[in-house]
Image 1 (cartoon, rainbow, N blue to C red):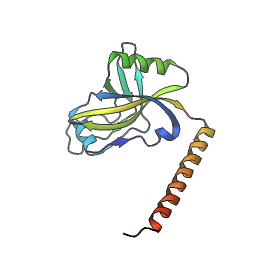
Image 2: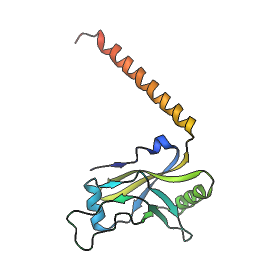
Image 3: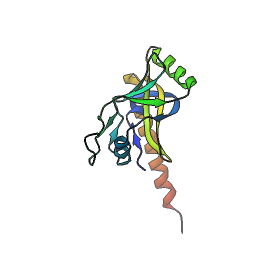
Length: 154
């Protein structure tokens, strides 16, 4: 089963609380996601006045073998969450500088699930700092890996 990841989320945002939401999808959307033909990089979550959470700007390509009832690629999709989780998301969206971003779209058994997180946007210096930490961590792992395999006899 393919997982659709939002790889840029950890680079652009400081990730806070996460929630798992179900998705209300059409049949051709399910088939496209199973084929890996979806993208959530620019997507975000909103909560309307009636308390419904929706996923916006997620691109799920039209199913190649679909017919005239094929879905629209960029329509809004309803999220299935508990009432308390929706309250937390609404409070985060109303707060200045926070947004709700999808991190991963995947299947759990036969149900499509979306991992969403309450995020705060990183400043430019925060991005640079996290990039420095990442390269330093990678260099130490590379050094330790080369050092570890050198002197052992099988």
